[in-house]
Structures are given as structure tokens and as C-alpha cells.
Amino acid sequence: MTAQPPDPDPRRTPDLEAGGGVPPGSTPPDSAQTSGLSHPQPMPSRAMPALWLVLTGILVLMVAALIVALAVGWLRV
Image (cartoon, helix red, strand yellow):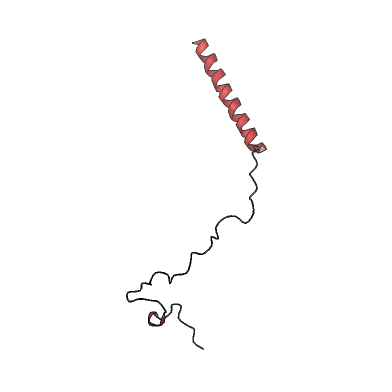
């Protein structure tokens, strides 16, 4: 058994004009949209994970320590 070619023969396609066009009214109506979500997606959590909270705290403490060290160093000069 031989498989059919994927494209129909243009000479045997109904309503096909010379050059490959089709007359008005012979095209099918627009199909329905299939995009979009089938169900609502859950909202991501706004809570900061504990690791980010710890890292942010360490960074704030390091910046504060740097500012204090610079202030003490300038006072001694």
C-alpha cells in the first residue's frame, strides 16, 4: 500500500483558480481560538523565602559595619 502525498493535486482541488487563488466565499469561516488557559493558574507566593531573608539581613549588617568602620576611621584622622 502506497501512502498518499501530503498535499492534494492542485488540478483536482475544487474552487482553485489558476495561479493558486480561490474565489471569494469558498474559504471556510475562521476557526475558534484555542489559545488561553483551561483553568486559572495559582498566584505565586509573595512571601520571601527564608534563605533570601537571611542573605538580605547579612548584607544589611555588612553595609552597616562598613559605614561604622569608615566613620570611626575618619574620626581618628
